[in-house]
Image 1: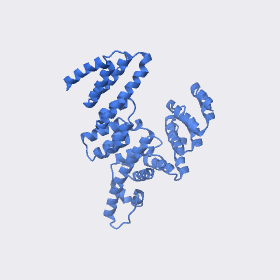
Image 2: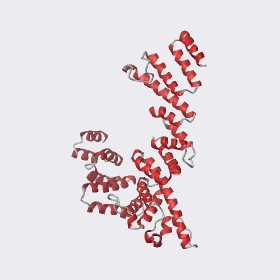
Image 3: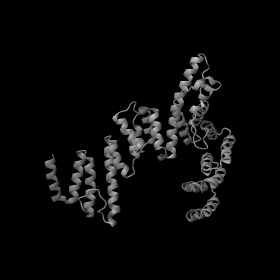
Image 4: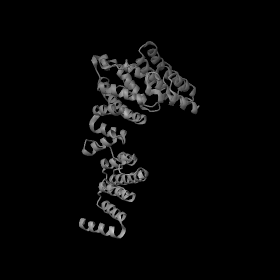
Length: 383
């Protein structure tokens, strides 16, 4: 077959020229499912048509500037075709190389989404985790597979490392899954102990109801779930949106954590020094449960802390809560006073906050005070 193909390419050269040679080569490579060489062949054809050197099929360095756009278009089309051919044959990792290069991974994401979550770790599941989670093709599905095949501890570690690389929507979705999982495990564990002590206890639906008035559940440093897992997942839960049902579950986890022995209540940076109590207030605010009291809790910390770094962290939490619940007019003064000057990276977020509130006057004032001519000009024309 190969000898015949060499001869056929010779005939194509005589009959139809160089383009015909590359067309027949591409056709043969598709038939043989030799997709990596197909990519080279498609790029070579375009280089031939452009009169560019042929010794480096996929390089753009030897393309004249005036012809680069045309070659790039052919390069993208070739990568997309090869990526889709590999995807059709379920060669997901190889498909990713081409589709990611042209920023067209939606079809790969859809393919991963259609795969049932494996029950145990296999070579296929590891490939899915690498693509979906670590390469960020479908982080939520990747985390589900990681959780199922590697357990909670490994998933928390991986999520901690990747969390800031995710979009806010992806962080919310991942946090929701982790909250659901831990809450379910904890509810089952606590319920088991209650039934051992009180066989005919009335069934309850929530963790908070199950622990209410039963201080003996926490006596003698007792706990019912890995306390480090509880700490991490409550922290992840700050990424939940107010309308997600998992916020109520996260508050129940925080209420449970607040009843643990002090040695299991690990402190954190302000305003979460009293970790679980602070999170109860945080989730109460998102749930619209005594928002005034919740905000007052953080305001008191802000008023009593003289460290500018701590003040910025406390103010950030307050601004975040207010912004997520559309209380922009209340968020702007805090952001302007404590965050814009303290954190240069907050400038873009502050500008977006002002735009959403329709308060370009605030943005102009802040930009002028910081001698930020670029932001001032942008705000001026938008106003």
